[in-house]
Image (spheres, rainbow, N blue to C red):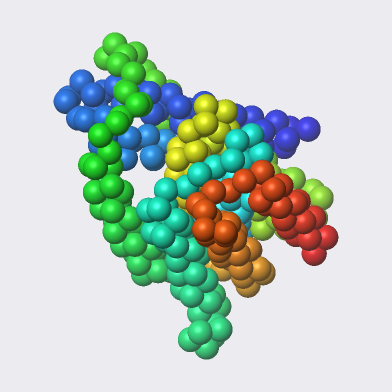
Length: 317
């Protein structure tokens, strides 16, 4: 029972802490004259990915690398098949041309690049095993810098900025930042400890725990954002949030994690990389069918069925 409390309590603490950190840091940045655009592209973007980053760092340092890699791949698969599936059932999601032809292919590229750099034995004939090494991590971070520059250029051309930074008293902003950092630290520890213990107790692999419970738990901020956006019929936010998160997860989070601690790669994760590639590819194809850029309710239902099938197959195997 204590392990479940650690697992789900850790997820809740991380999500709340990420929100506190974003609110506090954004308010402090605003007081120093930093624009909402820059805040959104840096602090807010980091905050929504803080759950995945926190879990990955603690998993890597604890030696539970299957959770670290499974968390990223599982989050990316859930983001498309589960979250876009649910969001498009609420309201069909139209997709901008840039997203269809640039951002979704970049999400696909991220999964392909990960598959290449992680399979040392298959590609190089390495005898030391498969690793996402520090050099691999630097390569992923280099891709992330390219994506960040692209995002800044796109954002500069957006004249409409609906989201405004909430301004807090300085003392309250500082308290929020400190609480956020502390919550991320302890939440990450509890979540990873609970997940590892549950996997050990029930004979479930850490890879499966990372792909399922941990991945969905850390994707809750993205799910909340996309579902609310769909309810408000703001399709661009619902889709952009997911595609951006998938790119962020591989290029930044996995890149930074492997720079801190090289990650041994379980060849079983190749199936999950293929699933992530298939998810991005299917999302791309669904936006160009019959000459339209939209994920409708039928396609959303198909996405959900595929996700259920993927989870069942992963648990059975």
